[in-house]
Image (cartoon, rainbow, N blue to C red; front, side, top):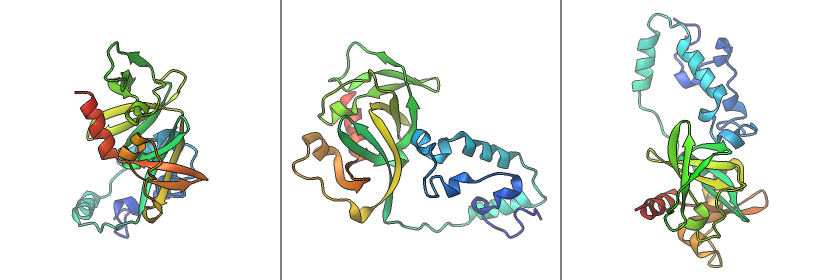
Length: 230
């Protein structure tokens, strides 16, 4: 049996050091203490070229006799889902407002995205089209959707790409802070004094690094964006 898998460990628990792979994502990445400076750009380790390179190394390694059968059995086993009272979110800033969306809806963060302006935007929400990895995607103003002053994309270099069940939405930001994990119990109700747009789309607020962060509902945001394009 393979020296790497002789203890019948699950694939995601293998000792990767024996393959000369440094599993940095377990230490400073999304499943570690999140101190990796690359998270500000890639949002999630799965978008990082280091993680992708480790995956290729695993796929290209030699396989011992019977190892594939072992893996098949392990994958077929029911996995225990550990329910958590925490939520992973990606934080960004629009003007003076700090906002967050669940990490699961982020696809990536891109820099200096070129926007092809359209003559007839939908109520100012549609800013134009962006090319991301060779595919044209809709670039929208989250500010306009939230009832804030729409400042467009000029002079803004960080763009968040959201994944809406296979569809992509891109919006410009003034700053991307990164990923944090928050306790659900620490999420407070949105105050009545908040702007109307934040009240409509927010599921609450939480404190982080001395700032009040508005937690947006991805379902409400995606639904409103889809409606605005009709």
